[in-house]
Length: 145
Image (tube, rainbow, N blue to C red; front, side, top):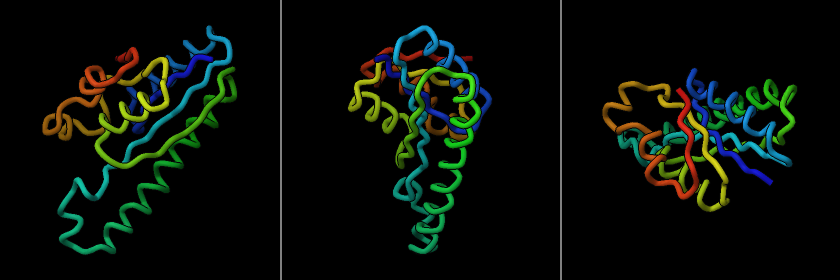
């Protein structure tokens, strides 16, 4: 079995990464593709808690719904033509760390991800998620432009 992890965030590079993972999976017997979406945890955004705990719950509920809709939409679209089996995972926390922890814990064979995500501002402040994953993951990482 060949297991591929693809972090998604709705960006064009993430979409290209999914397509690349599907292409790679076609050449492997019993390939599985796991799409992972990481929502920022309110713990990492202290301004949420200044407004109150109800905002934390509201933000988490919206993130859960939107994240799962995105994952389901990608799986529905890609599974029509792909031979690989798809799985989804929605996590909360710091994207690069959650991606690597999940990949390492589940012994993924490969991470395929886009070179840039949705937020350019976030990349300037936090650094590139793909760059961090490249250095923290135990398995090979393919960065798709």
